[in-house]
Length: 323
Picture 1 (cartoon, rainbow, N blue to C red):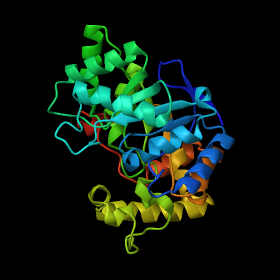
Picture 2: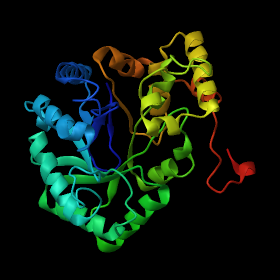
Picture 3: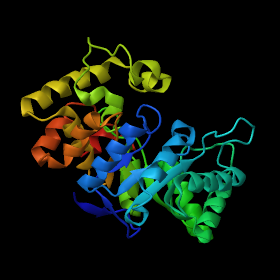
Picture 4: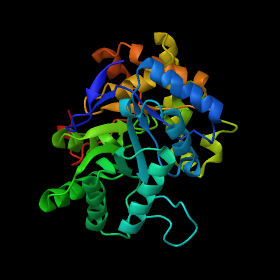
């Protein structure tokens, strides 16, 4: 396992980050612990969480597992989602952010978050109020660095501008979706991150399981997230996505590489990406992602994989200038 600087924070993180979304949900405590131990044995020191994952259970389990090694780890969490039924139970307002962080710290059994992400953009709250709340948490030592997840490039840039003008803590890390079938971040978000020295940890490198080798245009899932989860159905429901998955599966078989390993390695090879976030419902499902660091992602292999799927247009839509 190699280690990379997380943007300009000075923190060194493993080239893979483990996402704990399955903890306490798709993975019970026993399976969650097996995956945590496998990650630590492989050298992973970077774990991503969120308060809404299994309604707080993921944080509680992660806190239990990391109790003896907290200072060796880089731990993230997120807030924004509703954690209570009352009208003020979620959002990006200062009151909720402060309360959410206090609750996350208690569940995790730690005194600080290494990175706190705002989980979603909140159009109902001025970004300046959100950033002021985050600045107070950094000043208090409860949060070390702040980040944005699922923000558009202009939203990230606006936040950076406000923080620069006010002298507040700025977004140091972003967390966008990125895979062979979701490449929109290449147009503006990744160039912005490279220009501003942001750490980038990307989620869903295998497209919610779509790039696992199981699916083709004819062989659609009978169950699982791609069917039961409305968000995933909307995200990956178009025919071309399954056509790409079929072509990718055949490509991986031809190369003799597990498709999950290959898909994760492709994401990691982008120079603007610090590390992809991997995960799973069980240790057996996780193992091919852990082996992605063994893939020799040559420039030729990378280019061949890019050709399997749609390249997004440049931000200006001047196709004649695309490199």
